[in-house]
Image 1 (cartoon, rainbow, N blue to C red):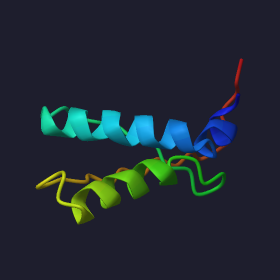
Image 2: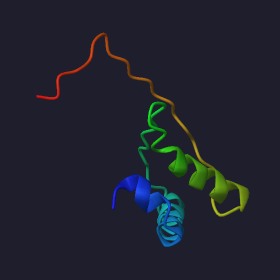
Image 3: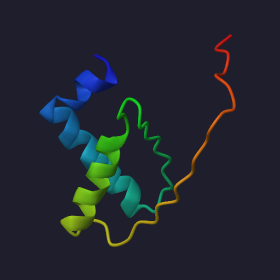
Image 4: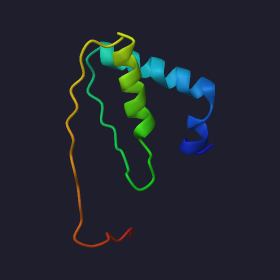
Length: 76
């Protein structure tokens, strides 16, 4: 399965939300990439929001980082 296909699986969502909850409870730092072009990564932010709303996570700090390129990078 691709990441997009996996995101549509209800079991995947429950497992990943539970994992995210445990990592945040332990105080782990997470790096989540969100792509405006493809929309990938948005589900991770939605899961964090859900955990905050339900009271599972007391506090989260988000540090936005933007990266832009003057030209298209070469994949080789």
